Length: 344
Ligand code: NAP
Ligand code: GDD
Image (cartoon, rainbow, N blue to C red; front, side, top):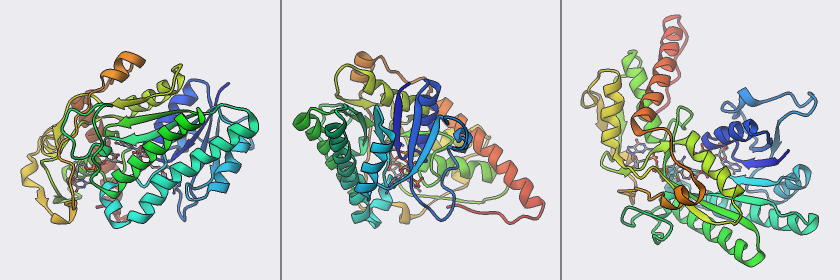
């Protein structure tokens, strides 16, 4: 049985990857940050009591800011594969917390690579590492973007991901480590964080439909993204680590839509016109925007045989349908006199 260690297991991708690897028979270990409230909502359905015999999902407290702790976790877990999905992953927030973003996204990756390098030396193992790179690294480069496109980062987040990408590539060349950089374009799901634009829209659609919200405030509606389904993308991560040689891959659908096109589809799903509800708030503009991301996934398709299963329309419908259901439950609670909690 293979053992995988996932940094960032409580996030959107971490939860889908944990499910996928568990389904393949892996023993899955995850690194969880200490928080004052529970942050394991996305993986609660997978959790098993550690007092049970041989649980298939084991959680470890740790943080990418704490190199010694990472080293200790590696020695305890002795993984075959490590997936580094941990990050301060919000682009706009990275302009507000740039040093923190760099510390976790760039230096945090370096800490994890160092820990794996030492563990490999001590144990004579050859742990395979997946590094979560991003299409944000292409930034202002013209679409379609492929593995050959030069990076042009447009935020502290993107610049930090570029640093992490080059750390990973350098450790592969310098120490012969098996490390793959996935350069993933935007991928969404009903588990997407609620401050990313797709989920912010679908949550609002559900609430507006059920009379819990009147307006939706957004920023730039003209930006174009290549949006896929997170469940499909985690499979590509695993496929990279099963290949006979480590390499870097763009993962994308090859199609791009604007934020406005997403709005049309999402509001249209419930028979509403987005223009009746959406207002622009410059607070959501970014100091430097990434206008147009559209990936060229030829390499991952031909070399690894990966392809996306969920279309753009299916993705929007899947997210809207879940958030309608969530809003209906909220409505029921509100009608019963419970106070409503509003995310913005
Ligand atoms: P996400 O939902 O924001 O999850 C991020 C994960 O990182 C969470 O588990 C979070 O823990 C953890 N984390 C944050 N700071 C940490 C720290 N200091 N130490 C340890 N863990 C920490 O992001 P995602 O959408 O799943 O994305 C996964 C990875 O892929 C990220 O690296 C992201 O930058 C990258 N990426 C995402 C996309 C996309 O479209 N989703 C595209 C390209 C690349 P908490 O739950 O406690 O916050
Ligand atoms: N978040 C947000 N909120 N974005 C908005 C809003 C809003 O109210 N209004 C317009 N947008 C625009 C943003 O300006 C951006 O052009 C686009 O919607 C997408 O924004 P996000 O959903 O926040 O995603 P992102 O593309 O910036 O970053 C995501 O994808 C990257 C891969 O390309 C994140 O998941 C990153 O972690 C990931 O690396």
